[in-house]
Length: 264
Image (cartoon, rainbow, N blue to C red; front, top):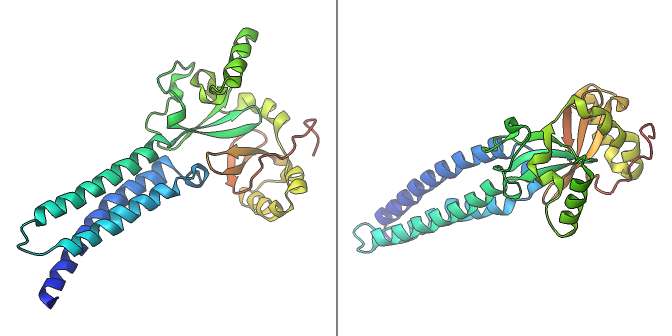
């Protein structure tokens, strides 16, 4: 291959690479800072989609352009069109998965927090508090899930869940604004750092550092499991008002709950 043709191929590769990086880069800025603020991307386990987009749109596409590019080649326009269509298809597929799985809510239900992706909740369903709707999903909204008080409705919900239907955390009609009114109930269901460390000794340094960063004591916080699609973590909130302090990479799922509010 002569030097001139090699430079032309490298130029075509570089131009295609720059365009691909610009498109994918803008999209990932929206993903990581809008739809999936840290650590939600890890919780939802969609890194394989990132790999797909980077592999095809940023690596394979520009490489193929460099291979097929030859000035004056009769089929050059067709070859480049096929490459662009391949990239576009991969991008649309990956982007649609990321958008459909974007976390719309982090819902507190009974004794845990659950990440609620867009694909699992009907945003057009009736809500007692319409202001909680989160159609764009730019950062999940924190909501409290209030179980139905009516016995008949509770029975219907239980039958629905037992039949494989959605539990109440996926039903917007049970969503309430997260905050102080529900703190007493949350306190009764919360875990303490001492109890968590007793079951997971390796969590102690992480908890100690988190308490220090937040400027609070162990007696001033409540701990709850946070369930994601592929990963589970820990939510630390302030005991007085349930304000979020930190999300830690500690899997609390299965840690025994206290028998009473005062049990450590």
